Image 1 (cartoon, rainbow, N blue to C red):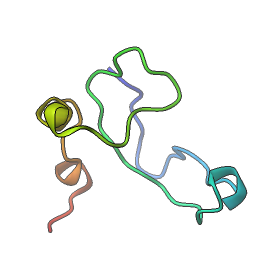
Image 2: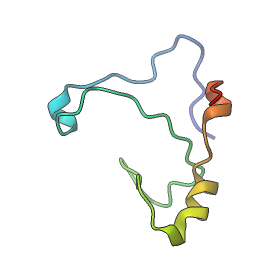
Image 3: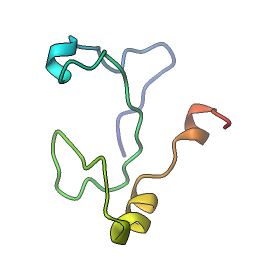
Image 4: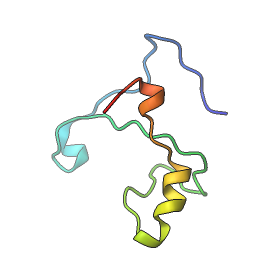
Length: 69
């Protein structure tokens, strides 16, 4: 189980754009069931052959975030 955060608790800080390839500071929210030994980064793209695995391993966080599309 991961770290449990309380409402209003800081979960991270945004860095400067130059640290992120000159992209504006932003936040990605991703649920990952199994990091598969990865540390510090996790694949952001997948081949079509691995898509079903990643869909299961990284479920859509809309339910957790209370988003509706």
